[in-house]
Image (cartoon, rainbow, N blue to C red; front, side, top):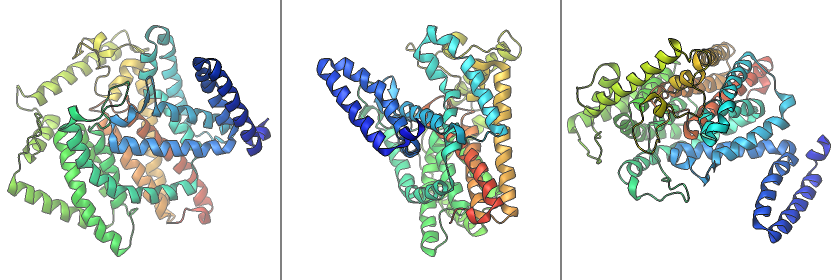
Length: 483
């Protein structure tokens, strides 16, 4: 059977037969034809065998780029209730089935599987009552399948290809951040909408802060290149990067903190002195110019584009904002909600179980902000884990994340000792992405949506693959990816 599945002739024969069957059923009834097509797709994908991995990896690249450039807007590509991220997740599950025998489980794998198993146990009982809502809320743990699949199928050559691809995308991304910000903040009501769902095709949020932190780490750690032309281009990139970072810092506190944490981590990871000098030089020049000009750009929102707004955002995080302002009101709202969750779990009846996946936490906890019930999570993914999975779930979550980060740090130090520069750079980049994600998800429901959740678990999966491949490379240095 396995030989049949992997045979190109068999795949062609199966595809042709399936197409004829679907066409015949469609002639009888369009509904029958659609149902048959949906039933055939999994078998057709499985018939691709190992080539299914290419389909999955290509799909992951497409959605990660889409989420990075267009934010949550890209997440609505599809036909509700099935969106593009769900399709790639399904292909990933099939890929995991085909590659099951290749999985080499480490301690982090077991922690991840345990966390996901507990999440499944807190989701299934509520599917009959809450339906799609239970499944949507369950992506907090369900997107972990991206980590398992990527950690299994990604190989050494994929990392080398990934670095080359990111080099080409960084200039376009830096140029697009201000454009997306203007579209998403100023012209939100006039943007084209996805059919059926009616959601805008572009959404600007603090998620951009995570990706900008990743871009900064990519450059600072030396992955962007070493040639003179490349180094000169880095100066221009820093100017555009600081513009985008300034917009994020004024419009989203979590995004601004994610930026700061990512930059600080990249600098701590011994970024080359010349690159640090370039960054600090450009940053100092631009901040000085902005301070002298002191622009106050009104974009039709309470948060203006100004240095004063950055200061107010920082003050509201590390201290108290001015009483009566929206920043302080928003902070008080969140801390009250988080305190209530802590009370009914750590000190209350939901200690062991949490409230499960499916129930609208904002409704049930009494913190809903609109009549349509669009708010479902407490703007902090860690608190969402506690509220829905109880103290055991939060314990698994904390241990899993600390084990992952600790493994990356240990791998980075080991790579440096062995002179494996490429792996040290990859470990550092993944660590920066992880830290930035952890920061921003402490202020926003970053992991509860595909634009953040799929990105986070994909980085997690790349980390699992890097840990595995680095061990192999250090055992045989000739296998390290070429720069």
